[in-house]
Image (cartoon, rainbow, N blue to C red; front, side, top):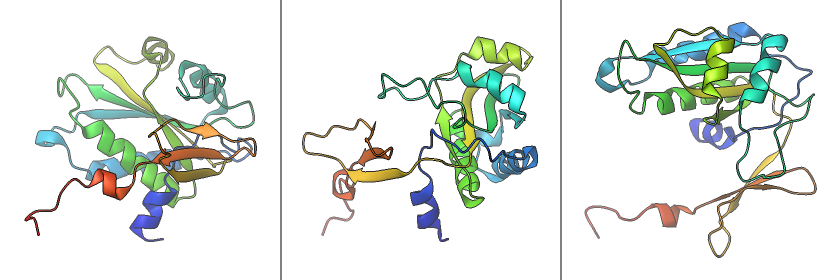
Length: 195
């Protein structure tokens, strides 16, 4: 697939086929991609923890927030939960702030996952204290994001932003997840030099 197709297939996925587990080596390979991404001042302050262990994945799952706009949904049911996680952390012994490194790393990992037939969700709503305890992390590692990964089990449909501009995503009665997106005309505010 070309790069545009890869980006278009890289939707936020919140339901997975839990009967198709991930291999931990796939997660390690995805983290390795981040070695080649840009880093502010080339500090490379990010560290990662990975797991595809079903028991540990089950303990990580309740420590995550899943979909702010879906008020009556507490995340995927058993059988539709992630089969792998990548925890993205800032090493405070290397830098005081991640800058935008964790965004670049997260997107790179997600694109790599899609290219391998997986999908995922970048989660920032995390019970950081409990997750740090579960992973026995030292104090100098600050959890920034958790990437939940697996084989996608829900169709995601991108739609034009409706009149009135409501950006909230929703799941239809058919089980498809709908995500409104702004048009290119709304995003592009100018071309320079002006014609």
